[in-house]
Length: 339
Image: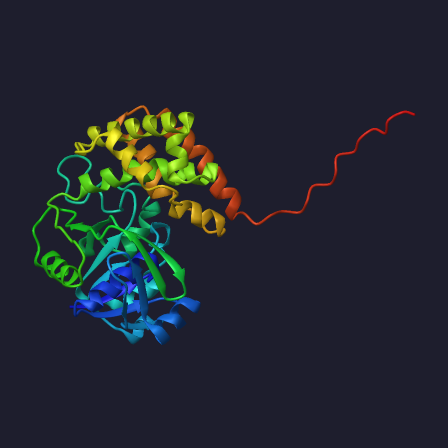
């Protein structure tokens, strides 16, 4: 199978290395020092499951690669609308796009029966910009349960998890999903095909919607959020509201809040990707994780006061971080003290 990884960062390079190890014809699309390291030394994976190095082709020019069977999309969701120039050279008549994103995907209502079948979620697909770049017919959903980070240029540290759940948005059984599953499993990864991936989306979202924004707002790790009485209670409230939105959309994740909180606490001093982005001055992935659920709450009539409040303050933090600093304000004049 011929596979391009567009966005060969922590998750993309890890998946690409495993796919290459399993015999797939893999092409990594990257840039900068990371790309140079991938070209010179390959992808070096450090893992308790066993270190390994893979040497797939790496480039910053997708036209060198040409059409592929599958594009594994490792970009953050906020970059999807602008990735067209990179994606187009990789697209053949039947190329699928495996979108490994957090949160609510742009294809969420595709194939859903009823009045919402044509509904577009503005938070994740503003003005239809993502749908124009990646038509829903191309999309295969992917929920990632692996934790990785870039330890250095070309070096990926794998902490835990090898599961990449996939599924067709319209719940169909497809040969393209089975082909991709086989390629992933040959590389040593778990890749179950779910009839309806939406339950997996909400299971993972229960954690992301809490710990990603709260970690950025408080500069705290997951275990610190869990062990503070006030933030632990806020986390439980946010999860309760999230499950209510999911239920009104007909999805009932088979995991309890207690179990989800316990899993987060076991993660220890894990710093979320949102906190990493904030510390590096990058846009935070909040729209698909948090704002989209508030939008779906408005659509379904679910009351979500805690989610709405966190969305407001986290959104302001994101906006202020992205805005260039203006001129310093003049000092406020003060009256001199009388002798």
